[in-house]
Image 1 (tube, rainbow, N blue to C red):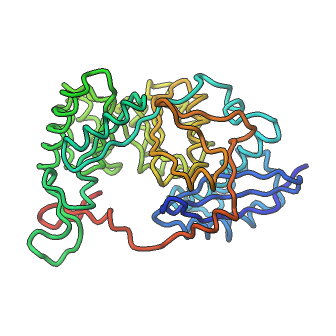
Image 2: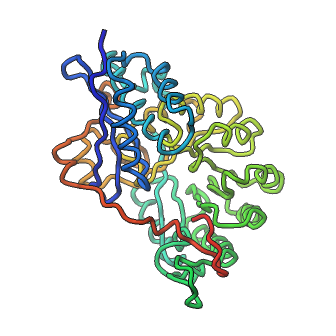
Image 3: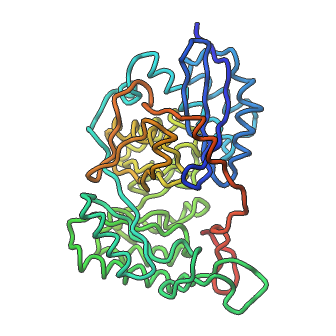
Length: 405
């Protein structure tokens, strides 16, 4: 019987974003797995959970028993469903699936039942300070062959000052509360103006998306969803926070704009009613936040039963290993919808050989056993992470109220 000999975290930041990778070694020479445990806002806490708690718990156990080991990690600390623990579990879980694929001589998507499609359609991010800048970015992606683009103007109520959305770098009256101030009403109006401008130039063939990022009061989010109906968005993301699940019922009854939700989910109860009551159209979960591939497969199956498609979270704080895991699910799930991808700058692809290939508006996997990706630890060590207080989550309304970013 093959056994686990070591479980350890690897911290690296090739693109300036702190990534957490987990490597699971076995007593079978050359057999190991890698997984993504990235919680970029608290990376060292995840690393500590992996190295000091999960490593001794898993030593000597059979890596083939993924389901049993997942539940062991999940309940061993008694309290559960927090982002630190879930990401630590995810890193191990993905690595175990990587090992299983290598032992079987099959890509992980084959372990999930094989391909339902050859590649995964992606959407890219078009950002700018005013509608013209966003349109230029949209058109560049169009020229590259992309079929879907997310349009954003002025960040998430954080970042540089922006007149169109009412964002300022600090309190407009020099008050005591530091942060990035933005006007939710101006922001909502600017979104409609943005899509008026973009649609007028690109027509109706390109899929367009927008991320509210919970910046609005619930009733204002509903008003925005209704105002955007003429632009036929592919989806409107995170119009409401997980704490306001009940408002999704009101939103659904008032608007036919497709809704995506799930980026901040940690606990199954945060998504269960959204799916079973068909209150959303796309599940946007960050896979490592819920514990890895094992729960994500079950979540995808739940979504399929209720007509909800997958659109896994895929920003820059998902490592290439995490993107590979996303992609294996994308290829195998019948109810795949779309995949978010920021891109893979050269240092990332060098540190992570086997990084999925992005071309012609799709993400492509290789056919190597397991997840088909590795980490060059010597090169990864050249990109140490930097710890500092997170600034972009310090967003405020005009009166100084701290709001979700």
